Image (cartoon, one colour):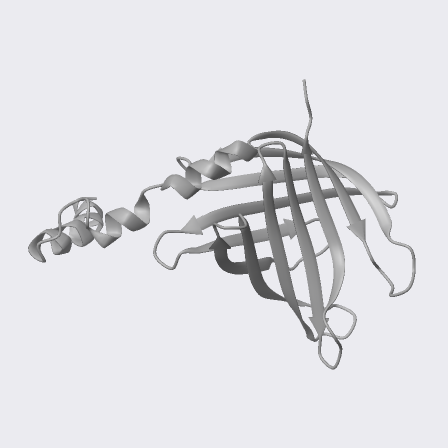
Length: 188
């Protein structure tokens, strides 16, 4: 037990020996929620979520509605969005976790659903001028076992609305918009 406590204090001991104060210590900066984390708190609560999906090019989109319950977790470091509803006759569940990495200055999002066994991980920078974030990652395609390049653009519109545009690019094809998620706060 004492060994474990000692291991946990090593980063702090090293920073002290290197002359860092707690305000400038890189590990402390990495650990502590910043102003941008506080901005995620605006999205805590219950939201109606319209999911518009363009399943086939040229066909009309499919629109479903689900509920998203959002809360801050791990001491205000991450926004957890838990979605439930009905997707084309099947029970739908998803959990997304969004955070901001103080070191590399990127937003990070992981999403898992009951519609598959894969995990979507996307990461990218925030543009404070437009209050958007463009995140990129990859996802495996179960139909052909190839990778799909994913780009998601987050629009932090106001405390009652957020929108995510999802674009996919498969090998040998152009990028196309496949999904749009619109969050609207449920007023009580």
